[in-house]
Image 1 (cartoon, rainbow, N blue to C red):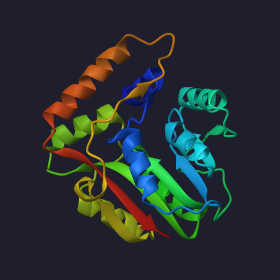
Image 2: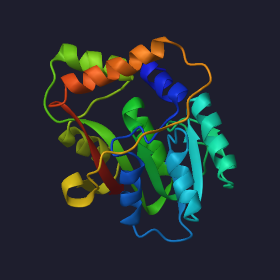
Image 3: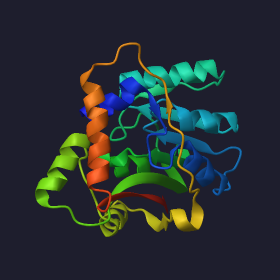
Length: 233
């Protein structure tokens, strides 16, 4: 597990994905979900999105691979008196039956997985006509091989795709009706407020990790971005 993911866990960063919880809320408001929809938050982090969905009355399952994230998510659910329980599990091997969900949400998670395995599992647990909504890193302009290797190593990305490569991967995995949702057309513009639930003890090296993250984002602002996409099985 990369130092970046460790940093997110120890700092308890909620809504670490671009756009934060405000983007998530805007996305969900536009989806016309049904009251009986079963939703999987795949890579729930500290449980911010799952909790929001729970308060709206949806039936939600939440998973993450990091034990500290799971602990913080379940503390959130208990504090907010929600009947939710986060499980430690991998998207590449989901502990759910076939066709269990009408919607899977993945926010800044798929890039950290072996993508084809993760997409196959998501497709398996989605009911026919079910949707995947994902907010993921995208390469909007080429990096040199050395730069791309450095970015992938720091974040722990298994892949760093361009827009066309994302579409290709989703199509290969059997998803259809792929729509790239543009911030300009669909999404909020405000800078999100980051919520944190800090651990009592944080390894000092993770402060350096946070600084390196800011430096990488600044250095590659013209190359790295993110996309919000939806697709159907």
